[in-house]
Image (tube, rainbow, N blue to C red; front, side):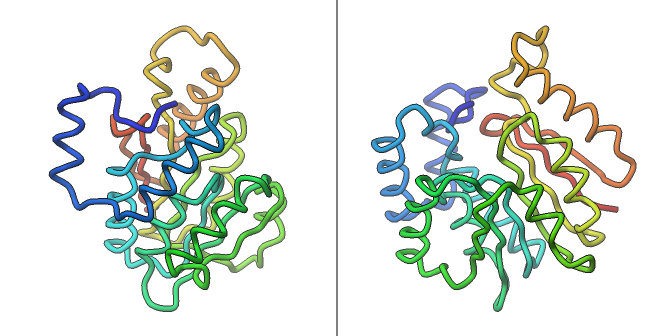
Length: 218
């Protein structure tokens, strides 16, 4: 996993980033703090161009209700929350109080804390206890890869027609085209096959960041 689009040269990626709307100083500080506080896990944070894209897509969808599975230190949740329509709400699912304590602080600094509902428990439990008629306009899945198929199957029925599901790390540093060297790679390969065969969505896997699957519910 990586924060940068490794399919591009460093020079070309810098060009892409500098010719896109820029992440603000707050997100830059969050990225630096995350790298310093959690150096072994910092690669789980999305890159700046992906964050800009996710804010834009949230706005294009006109999302008022959004869902995030895997919040880490809050970069992606800030990007989604900023794109929500007036009165919108993002439900965030994570199991780490340590990581999300950083997220909660930055949500306040970003002025989006009132748009975020953090559920600090396994996402499967949160999803199973939501009201039966709860529907989302957009969802972002970026958690344990072994759980991807289960998350997909639990989330998709709750997405409105025309709504969008984003799934991160679906190229997994390019390892998905090789014989699975780990359970994690095998899980990503299985998820990609599962999602691509799902008749309920139109789907594209973009070579963006570490691979970003975008699915629109039919």
